Image (cartoon, rainbow, N blue to C red; front, side, top):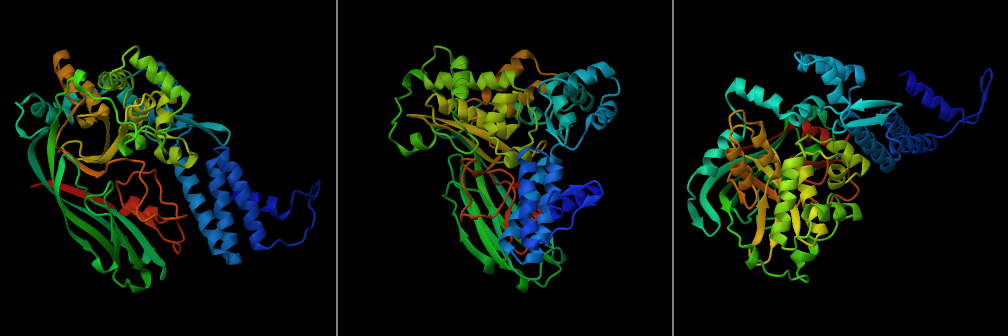
Length: 503
């Protein structure tokens, strides 16, 4: 509170500070105060001082409300949300993270714990004059040191993901049609539940609900129902590149204790196994839309001289696109440890995911898949990150993987981070690990739910100026609401659920 009062006084006194205090200045209008506070907030935001920025944007919002400037109020509201989210990605100072490390790793020496914290791969942020540590630091340190997870899995006699997938990988190929294996049928639902009293009395509540698309290994997609159906404005349809049902809900019509929104669907997923002869890969049709769309920069796949130099250092003298992509795959799998990434901060700061991995050498399924795509694109190989969910029983949840395009074969799947998960197995032999990791270049299990072919696709319809973070991909409902006092995406974080069940 003291910080907020001081910041307010700085604006009111207009910098005229004498030895005995502020001089008397003409009273400023709430609009002028809001503009000054917003400008200071933007400066703090651009300097990564997110706590200060959040306070300033919040004060600006209050002044704009008093002034009746609704557009400025929404802009300040959303900037407060972005800065708060970015700061919340890095909540721990040094003493707090050291205390957490001591609890998490009691049998590890303090010197070793400090060495882990001081390693270049530990994500930190300089803000408010000190260094802050990423909220997932303890999780990431385990993944940077596979022996820690191997010990955990040995005690449990279970390696998540690896134990479910290895039987499929080692089984005889049960061929369905071409590269697609025997189908696995799923039913699922996307649900959003919000207490009515948490919402304003009036206004339009806009929701983009993620649903499956018909694409390659994912077939027989049926949208069973959307509720409340009377508020559905549009749908991308099951044949689009991204699966969305869009609703506009007049809040004055909602009188029940909860606003319940849901979409129910059914789809079939197939395992993929490609057999590729590098000598039979055809030259690219460089004038085709597929080639032109997926060999250029996008929001999170940014092509820079540094990216191209990195790609060339990986592939060496190899010129065949299939073998080049294979070299990039193995480079990521063998050298970049899996790590949760600070996506809210990346989104707020405008840092592309591919650039984050290039700079830090770490990333999660989204970051590493986008990095794979960037390295491939820089060499003229069409590539993209594809996303939705992983549906295997153990580590089910949100997931992103990647694809690259070969003329004559189509889109070839890869999954660098599921491959990396093999290193946490406590009982896998070197031969097992090689077979496991090799599988995820050119093959893919049927335990997937595809929502979008490409992570950097825009919402349909376009939300305009509405801020609907985090990042570009859609794994939970996206929400916009101009009458809500806080950015409405908080409701999606707290009240959304996607359930997918094998039939």
